[in-house]
Image 1 (tube, rainbow, N blue to C red):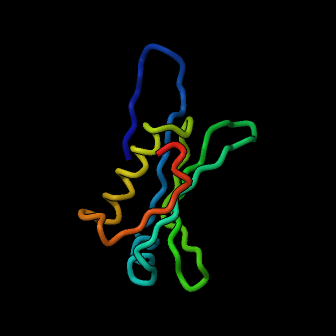
Image 2 (cartoon, one colour):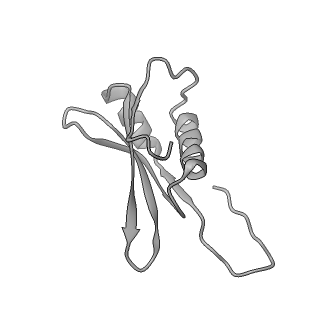
Image 3 (tube, rainbow, N blue to C red):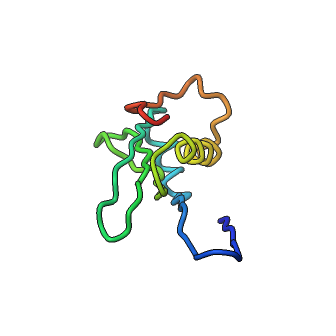
Length: 105
């Protein structure tokens, strides 16, 4: 977990990344090396964007990780993908397939 405190100015939420070790183990043991990436708007009281990485299991859907970010842009996707690749221990991406609409990546 990382956080940054800025003394001058109002407190402001920026990003959160949610990852569980059990999800990683289940994905690596029972799913293909295919990861779907997508983002959607949060339209409630708190605005932002949720970014998700989903694998494919026997039911065609296996949540891996998700994050809430301030906006869907290159910076937030880069941050999300760097953490995802670290958590899944991806060093060589050749055997992996990442599927996205590619608008912001």
